[in-house]
Image (cartoon, rainbow, N blue to C red; front, side):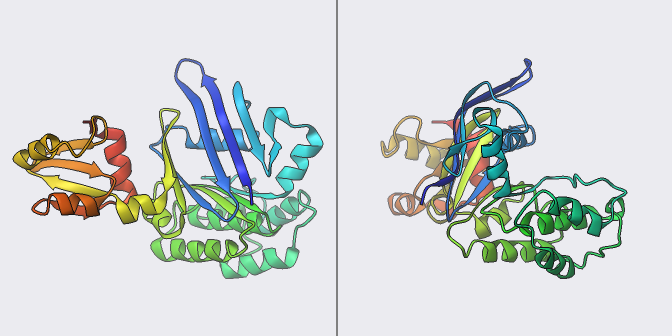
Length: 297
């Protein structure tokens, strides 16, 4: 069905402090892509590049199979933006606006805006149309952004920390809404989040960026269903290394006060080979921590 987002070899420097380096990332139709990494790793910069909010120095960005950003003409960009809903990590609307007026301003930007759908979301989120944006909590500001993002029925949602500031019940409500949205397989979501447990509930693939580089991009199930953390004592660790089962560079290793943790791609094969060593199921957070901070062996 093709990719909604396809970025290839994207580079962007910010002086000597930070750069995106040869970033490759895609969001196929019918897919929720989780985007993870530490603060300052490059998630928001990548999202801004995808949206054409910052220029890139090299590489290419395509939305809906067509060039976007610096490679796109104005009409092509306008058509692409009509098909995107965006939620940033902070509410961007002018504080003095009412919730209702923020919706009216957004309505002027989208020919497919559905005022009835927007009103339905306001009721669902318990958002008072008369309340000023500046008086909204962080969580309610996120809900207003979601209402605006979904009211014009976009094909692509780009969410930058959209569940930040929400309590667990509210986050589950948002995730349920996103699941409903994804019932149409022509759609897709790019969702950056520090709350990796949310991504475990909804993502199909997970990409991780660190210091401006993509360090892994893989199916979520290969992390949460297949990968494992071997909990080794020092003697166990040496035996695993001496077994010859793992090629040099294949293992990620982190030492702690109680022993050594090993990241393995297949916890079932590891358990069969080393049944006396505990091997826990890996979470996205476990996997990311071992990849980013673990030693390579």
